[in-house]
Amino acid sequence: MSNNRRFVIRISDVLGFAIFVALIIIMGGNSNNLDYKNYELTYNLLNHMKGSEVGYFTIQGIGNKLGLSFQQFKFLISILCMIIIRVSVKKYIKNTFCFYFLYFLYPFFLDVIEIRNFIGLTLLVSAIPFLRKEGLKDKAIYVVLVVTAALFHNIFIVFLPLLFIDRIDNEKGKKWILRITVVVSVLIMLTPSAVLSIINVFLARLSSLGVIETRSSYAESVQTRFGFLLFFAKQLIGYIVSYYEVKAIDKIKYINDNDSIQIANQKDIIKIVYFLNIYGFLFCPLYRINGQFSRIMQNITVLSHIAFCSTVSLCKGNKSNAKTFAICLYIVYIVFNFVTIMLIEHIDDIIIPILTNNWII
Image 1 (cartoon, rainbow, N blue to C red):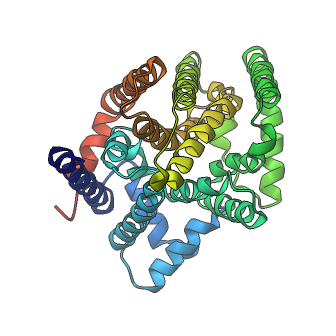
Image 2: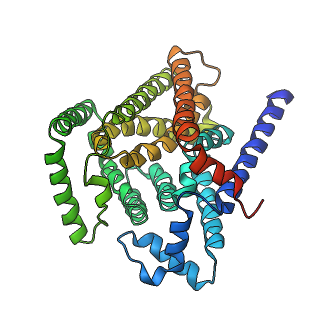
C-alpha cells in the first residue's frame, strides 16, 4: 500500500470518528425539538405514566433513581446507543465516514426527536448479525434483542419474523410476499374503512393482552390520499438498489483471506437488506392508512446504509455496471429523502431547533 493510500485512509478514519463525535454532541446535547417537551414531561412525571413500552419506562426509572436530569439522561442514552451502533457497523466496514454521512442526511434528525425509536434501532442493528448464524443460541439472541427493541417502540415487532429468513428467503417466499402485498393493497384501496375495522379489532385484542399499547391515532381513519404513493416509490427504489448490490457482489471473487470474516459479514448484510426490502413491501399498504408507519422504512434505511457501504467496499477496484447503477441510484435516493423530508417538510420544526438548541455548544 502506497503512502498516499495510507494517508487517505487515515484522513477518512479521522473524519469518520469526528462525525461520530459530532452526532453524539448534536443528539445528546439537543435541548429543544418537536417532541422534547413531551419526553421531558414523561421523564419528570414517571410515577404517573404507564404504557406497554416498558423498556423505555424502565430505563427512565433508573435515570430518576440515579438523580439524572432529563438532559443528562438523554445525553447518556445518546452516547451508549451511538457506541453500540459504531461497534455493530465496524463488523461490516472499516471506514465509517460514509455510513455516518449518509445517516446524518437521513434519518439522523428524526432519531434525535424519536428517542424510543432510536433505542429500538440500536438494538435492531445489534441483532442483525445473528440472523444468518445457524446456532440456536444465535437465534435466541436475535429474538431477545428484537423483543427488547419492541419494548421501547412497538413498531420493531415487525422484524421478529425475520428469524425465519433462511426458510423464506427464496423465490417462492419472495413471490408470496409480493402477492400478499398486492392483495392487501387492493383491499385497502377499495375498502379502507373495512380494513381499518379489522386492524382496530386486532390492535384492541393485542392491547387487552398487554402485548402493545393501542395507538388509535395510527388507525382510526385513513389519513392519506395519494401521498402514500411516494412511500411505495421509495420502497421500490430501495428494492432496486438492493437487487443491483447483490448482483454486483455476486460477480466478484475474493482472494484476501485476512479480511475473510469481514467480507462474509458484508455479503450477509447486503443479502439481508435485499430480503428486507422485499419484506418491506408487506407494509406498504399501511402507508395508505397513516404515514407514521413509515418508521418501518426509516429503520430499514439505516441497515441499507450499512449494505451500501459494504457494497462500495467489496466492489472497490472492480468495474461493474450493476455497482455503478446501485451507487448512483442510492445517492440520489438519500439526497432526495434529505431534501423532501428534512429540508422541505421539517426544516423549521426539526432541523433548525436541533441545530440551534444545544446545552453543550
